[in-house]
Figure 1 (cartoon, rainbow, N blue to C red):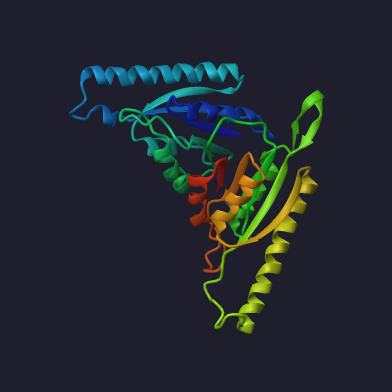
Figure 2: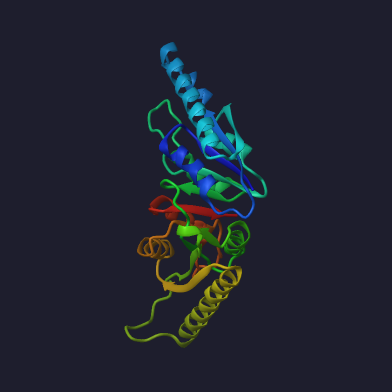
Length: 292
């Protein structure tokens, strides 16, 4: 598993490396820590020589800390520094296959620093690999929310969990405890309202019932696959605004990680993961893994 961790020297960069160390990968992670210095900003006319030296010194400290952290976590990997535009440089170095990208949801906000939060949206929209957006330090993974809608992207999200993560985690006294996955399917509210209060056009009612049955089967089948792989799982069908419902479930169940596809079904009355993933990343309290 090839993992690229973007860092700017902030806590979010440090937490990202901790996530790479603690995620229960089936295969050991080979980690590259990437620090990008936006060289164009150093060349702005109002920059003084002292300011440029200060920025470069901060960059060197970030590299040193990342190197020390990599060694302390006993991870197989390297630390590298590059100059260039932040998002394009990260995308250029991100794994194309068999790996994923880790980036903080926030970064250092001074004008001369690398603000991870300003590029995370670009990365989840344009990266060809899964992107983990880190919201806090890495816990031992216990509970995961998996949002699906029947699209190829959500199928890849399920497959990613099944093939990339071990289904159990270490607990006290050497015990192995299964990771719990809540599989969530949200049916967006229909744009076609009843003609009158208390009435529904028959074909609309039939379609809604069909969609409800289809959604229930989808989550139940997905949950069963997870159980057969060694996870514990429950199936949840929700109705309403997809992003809001995912966030509500994640908050109520205190999940450590939300996993979802980057793109969803295009039908107007179905769950558009692509339009939802950005909102979930922006507003979730837990970290979010967006799978392509």
